[in-house]
Image (cartoon, rainbow, N blue to C red; front, top):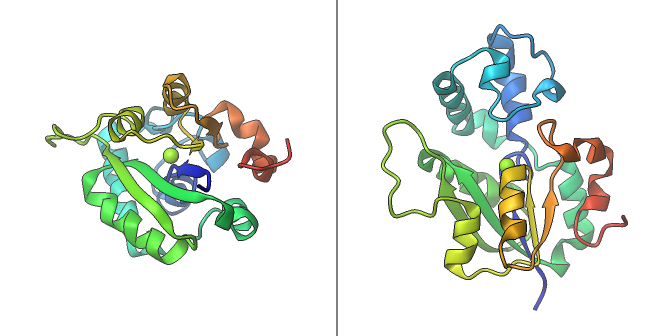
Length: 197
Ligand SMILES: [Mg+2]
């Protein structure tokens, strides 16, 4: 069997925060003027906006036509061109339920390799009932009995939870300004499976 990679969607394959900030950031009066200054995620506190405003703006952007035009992270697309066929690819995203279809549509148009599967953990939004769903990506892997060889995510909490689980996956924290891997942002190819360390 080919090794299985579980990819995060937002801010790994799909550069959500950077694209959202480019489009919606200028409308927000904030001391944050560049993407690399977003050292917290969610960034509402450092941007001086409410969590509700941030979620609404981000989710509207996720469902916009503009978002469908965003390109796959170029480092990953270069990596896939050379290495993609040697692995199985599963996408596991944590998004609000009303933005899942937009992610699937984007993947259909932008992710070149066949997918071994797609899963999601709903991100909580005010007034939504989310019982009956997995609560975290770690729960998802456990519940589905998945044993990925590689697990790639920009969220350090998620990476830590999966690393502590008994999956035996190699965990890769994907560089973002809000995590400690950001210093490796020039070296993304080396971080990915089979990369030269
Ligand atoms: Mg992410």
